[in-house]
Length: 45
Image (cartoon, rainbow, N blue to C red):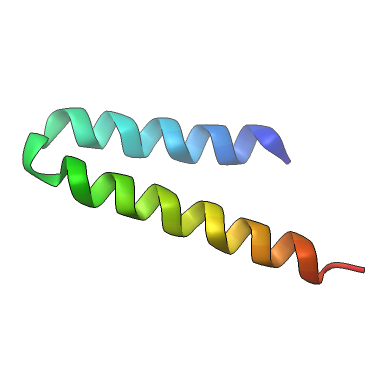
């Protein structure tokens, strides 16, 4: 479960390096992804 999350964050980080303008948006996206993952994990029995 850890590796897919790590790969997604790594890809988003690389995209953020390519487009410096989107860096603040990248941080927001990462925060939203982490929040969604936590919500999904908490709803599983």
